Length: 66
Image (cartoon, rainbow, N blue to C red):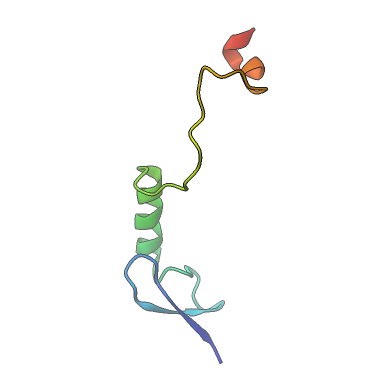
């Protein structure tokens, strides 16, 4: 029995399998619209804010630190 998932963009039912090349999206369009929203920073993964003035191991390796 095939697994059915909902397209994260439009909610349309999608078969989760090789016959659905854009899974979990229903179409290339939904996939690209979702990607555009991530690139426009409309979606974010939660994390902690870092203090840019705080000394960190990465600060000594920054391009302007030479």
